[in-house]
Image 1 (cartoon, rainbow, N blue to C red):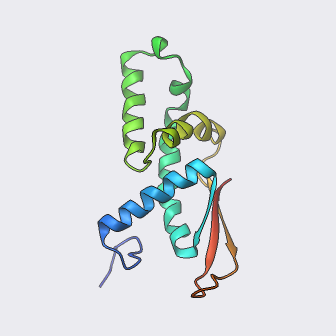
Image 2 (cartoon, helix red, strand yellow; image 1 turned 180 degrees about the vertical axis):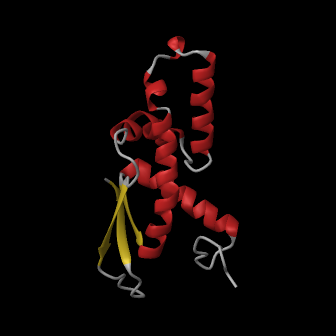
Length: 134
């Protein structure tokens, strides 16, 4: 039984699944929108929302010049960067998260992504969707 077992498996082992979602989070932050299957988009939403929330939590500190931050503030920024770096693969996407995406959503409490269903995939009829940042 799968009681309280959250998350879809997608026929992959855990390391493959984690790598897939890390790549998808990075691509979504880089490009703003990606096209994938509907179940993957719904599952990806969990990871992206948490990552953006992490960025929002310190967006004001990131905007301050490094010289003016206290040691405690700098520690919070470094911690947030490291926690987000667990999911975001490239430095460019990580910087974009903290400097562009997080300030854009600072007044929003969740719901940073939108999933739009599109036509099924031609090859196997899989339901497709576009997931994008709002």
